[in-house]
Image 1: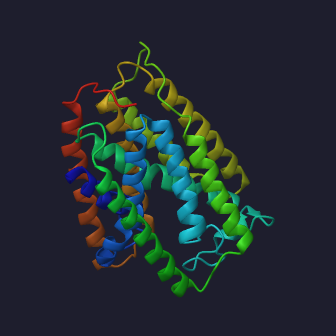
Image 2: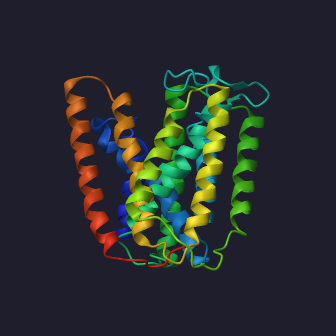
Length: 306
């Protein structure tokens, strides 16, 4: 059970707390957020591993999760004043009622940091294959649904906003389309090709993810983010098929992306002594976790995991 419980907690910690979007003082909310974030991450990971699918499928399912959360649960995709942020004022797409650049950032952010990074980090220290039996999987599904309903109801009361029926139907259809797109994605045979050292992968992941979050919130930034996705996907597919690509490489890619959140969070956290100190402690613990998992992943060699 420890990998499952770790992923349940790590997904919201990375997706919200390390990012600084939710302050450490709101740590009790982790119980609810773990149901939505962690339950979603566990379900995606278990479905992929039980059906013999690999990381391309996990990340596409992560995109589906991103649309589900941003479009149907917290509805930040459509809310013109979500938590006081005017997200829809930049790169507006009036026909859909969204901001193109922020929609892309929200969905990809959830796929990479809320789903992909926590799964990769926990898998670097856990055994491959499924972690749960059918009963555990059913319980996890109930936890995910319960957590999602609680988040939806809380934000509905707090924000007083509900997307239009057309927007909700469109988001739901997009989620279904992405899930169906993930189904054919099965691992291809590994080939003998050169792959960079894990430390190079980690630095590359840090630079790519940092560039992604630093791109401007305008149409130029939107185009650059699309280009980033193409480059990142191409590199991941090319090197990921290498026979020498192992646990150390997968950990390094996730760690590099997580390090981006450790500096980005300082721009979002409240600028007063208490929150800053609490956030500093959280970041220190995050780095300590990366060190421990890095040592574990380094000792795993090239254990295959598509």
